[in-house]
Image (cartoon, rainbow, N blue to C red; front, top):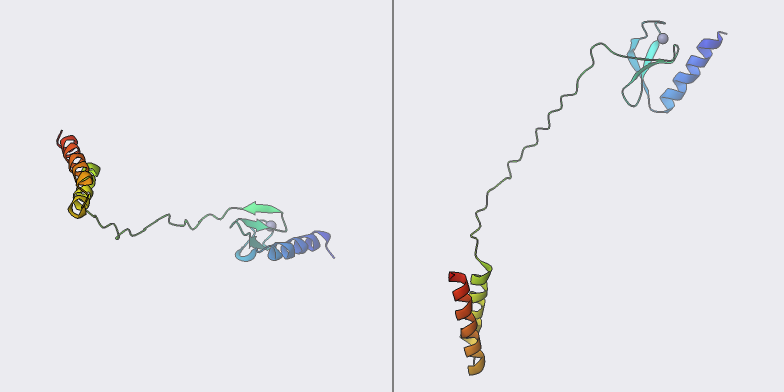
Length: 117
Ligand SMILES: [Zn+2]
């Protein structure tokens, strides 16, 4: 029994266990079937060399992610001051306490001044 062949078979068996597969190609040196390792490397277990396939099937890096959901939403930008004024005006509507009414009215007035400045 050839010792080298034995070793290569052991190597091959180990590679297969590790998830490698047998390639259709044969080693240009020893004409033995070569293995494709999990990282897509071609490897000859007999020669213990890594091989490079001449026509490497390039995986097209084409991230054709379709972003068709880029709907443009036009948001009416309302100033935070205006929002406060509206909210205070709403409170004023329901306010029954005269002092509080004046307070709200004055706050609104002040805010309007700031808004318009
Ligand atoms: Zn070989």
